Image 1 (cartoon, rainbow over the protein chains, first blue to last red):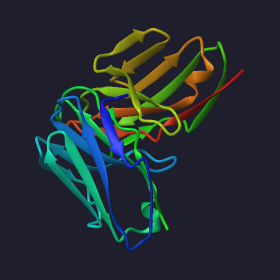
Image 2: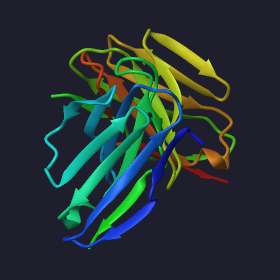
Image 3: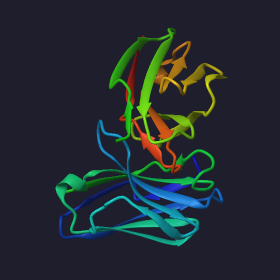
Image 4: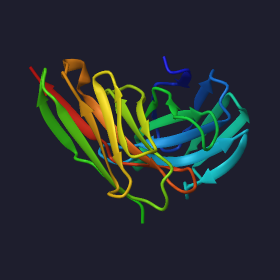
Length: 113
Length: 109
């Protein structure tokens, strides 16, 4: 138990579906992150939020849309995905953008058919 | 560009010692993290080094040489549960974490 909870743990969707990934942290942290993890590749930073404001968007396709309604919750909205988007999506939180280690959720395993 | 290199896979024997290396070239340096990730689980924090030298934490130790752009994670008295991937990440001048691809460690009885 890391204090960061992600749902769903597994998701299978077609290319025309719309779905959302949810992340919740109970650590009182101010920064939250979405990462994509593919086999044998480094973690790819997708989005960073600090105090509910987006501070980083690493050239992520618009079919991925983040939302941070408050400092404890982070969503990743998915629509018209491609098979190459199949991966493990990890949420993480940190005390602030420049302090402390990252605490990760268990991830959402996404398969796009 | 920024780059983190670590071996893709290593094999070691239960009870032995293994050293996992990480070399980096980044724009600035504000610390280096090691994480452990078991298959299907979240990465979990192992260590953080910002100054040169060795940090010891039980069976695990982490070393840093900033002048050489080099770190290693040393695991002693290996146990089967140490089979996992080990991720190296450097904090750059913008406080972004730059990640290596991870080292899969296989422990054999």
